[in-house]
Length: 426
Image (cartoon, rainbow, N blue to C red; front, side, top):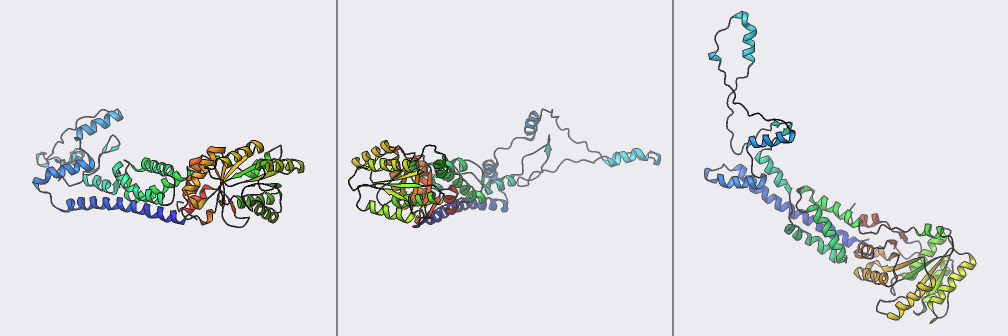
């Protein structure tokens, strides 16, 4: 499941990380040469610019100490020059004054510190309990192992990932969301070069988790909680989307849970649709209400609900004719079914493998009748996963189930962790 998208994401993330590492190593190489080569007098201005680029302009010691003191609210006293005590100027001391002599010997003989070269790291000293700025090359080392990606670089790097998502039929709106999420985490922020791949993967995981609508529907609980039976579910989708098979899978699941149901053959338009649903009803072991071809689909739904009330049946599953949004007559017919049946749940069934087409179909049905949830059929053979990561975000409706095979038991309750795991983002 989603193998194509998984491989594409993995490749894109690796390329982004490699590009960042490549740029970082180039900078590291330049700085390495500067460290190894002796500095010439005429090059000092050049090195000063490098120093300023990597660690900024250095303020005088007195100003640094004064700023730190203001923060800590302590007074900074100007450092007095150390007095130099020379032993030769001390007069001979008698033995009985040994105690005094020892005091003199304990005094530190201080000398002026030797000046250190430009490339020597400064000693770390404590000022008001804080650390002074680190050495020049320590700062450079930190800079070249840490990267900051600007917007222009990000646009260039994201292109690899954008292409991977587009090739996997991920909706444009979803790509934009992922792009904005990554930009927020990566642009103008110091990141260890070795952690770029990990940060992208973590951000992608969180971003994709946010794509799935949190309004989860527990169908079994919903049916059990309804006081006035039956619980009515209407299924919509285009021809060949796996709608009728998905209805049979739901009927089988309800039966296994001890919930009774009846099927309504409201697809009176497509040839052999009634016979097909009847075969599924017989195999699962549930009743089906049907009229002849050309009959009013809303009337079939009405009779099925009436039958369920009379027999105290828990749920009614209504099959409808597959239709495209361009077919005005069938759209009007679908709206009539909803007015008559007043379904508790309106479910769109789409083929996961159709990618963007599935997303557009769901969007159209949602605009026409206001769907409540989604079933993605044929998810087990979907290599790209574009519909799975897009449809819920676009429609703002939850994915209820994934069809994972041809058997009646091949219906998996949706869990976003399934998508994350199959995309290799765990």
